[in-house]
Image 1 (cartoon, helix red, strand yellow):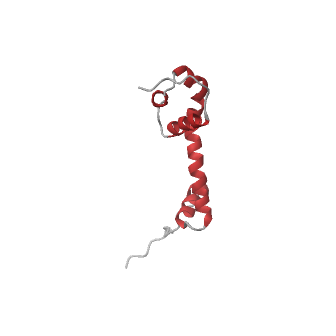
Image 2: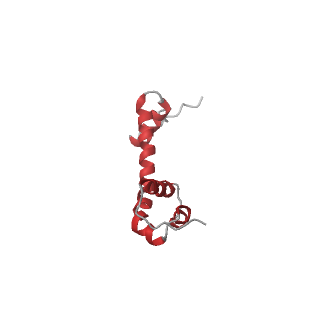
Image 3: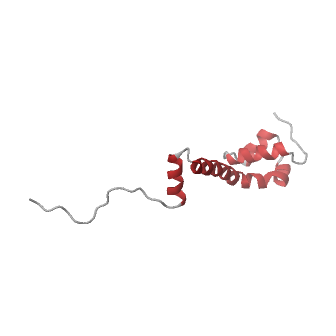
Length: 102
């Protein structure tokens, strides 16, 4: 069983809380795994859990954008344009007129 920490937040603990929160860990799991009391967690780390998922999504989006805009990953460029610029697949479209029966 881990010892309960009663200290001010360290940068490494802040990062650990953010990562665990971004991965979907509940506050109870984070407190248990990092040895934090509920009081210490609520006082110093509850914000990190709230923003952890947003930060993780932003980091992944940044890498996705960098890869998509590099020119080296055309599939990602196309995916970015479909998702962010509402591009649609081009292809044959029904013109509404059917070929006559013979």
